[in-house]
Length: 305
Image 1 (cartoon, rainbow, N blue to C red):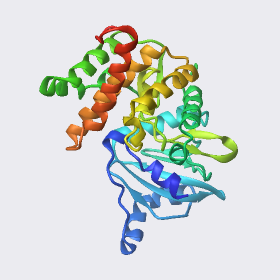
Image 2 (cartoon, helix red, strand yellow):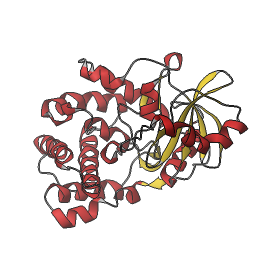
Image 3 (spheres, rainbow, N blue to C red):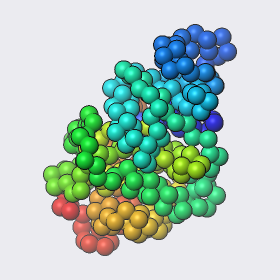
Image 4 (cartoon, rainbow, N blue to C red):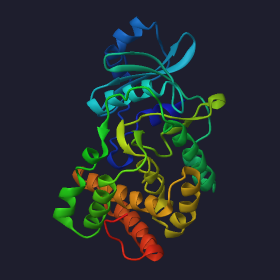
C-alpha cells in the first residue's frame, strides 16, 4: 500500500516536492479536509493522509474496495483528475467517484515496482511495460477532450533558460521549437510518465496514475523514460543506446524523432530544476548524451527534425 500512496503523491520528477508525513497529533486534524467526501461517498479511512504542495491524499475503503481519495489544491492536479475520468479506467486507475476538486481512485495493491525491476537488472523489461501502458493511454477516442494544456505552453520555462544560460539549453530549445512547430500524431498526453507513475494493479495489469493533462505529440510521453532522476542509470550513455531501439520499436516512433524529444524534455527538466533552486546538471547530461547520439547517426544537431 505504501507504494501506491507515495506514487500518487509524486510530482513531476524534475519538480518533486517532499510529501509531508504528519505527526501523530496532526492526523485527525488533517483528516477533516476529507470529511465532506468521506461522508458523501461513505468512505472508511484506511491509512495516514499524505500532503503535497498540490494535493491531499487519503487511503480509504469504498464498498469494501481499496481506494485513494485525492483532493486537488492546484489546477494541475484538478486537470489530472479530468484526464483520469476521460480515460475511464483504460490504461489508468479507475475513477470511482468525483466531485469538485476531488476524485476517488482505484488503489494499486500489487507488490511489483518498476523502479525495483530496474535496480534488479530488469531495465529493458520495465521500459517495455511502460511503453505498453502508454500505448493504451494514447489510443484514439471519439470523446471530446477534457481541459488540457498545449505542449508549447508546457515548454514555456525553456526559452528563458536558453536566453540566460545558452549552451545545452539553447540546443534543447531549438530542438523543442522545431518539434512543437510541426507536431505529429497529437492527442491527450499523460505528461509525467515515469517508473513510479505506472503501478501494479495485479489482475488489471500495469496502470497509470497522476497525469498532468497535456495536448501534443505522443513522442513527448516517452522522453522521461530516459531522464527519470530517480534512476542513476539514466546518466550512462550505454543505457540510452540500449534503450533507444527498445522504446522506438515498442512505441512505433522513429529513433531520431525520439532522440529529439529526449533532448527537448531533458532541457525542460533542467530549466525546471533551476526554477526550483535544484541541480540541473543530471538532466543536462542526459540532453548531452542524446545530442551526441543524434549527431553520431545523422550529422550535426539542429532544430530541424
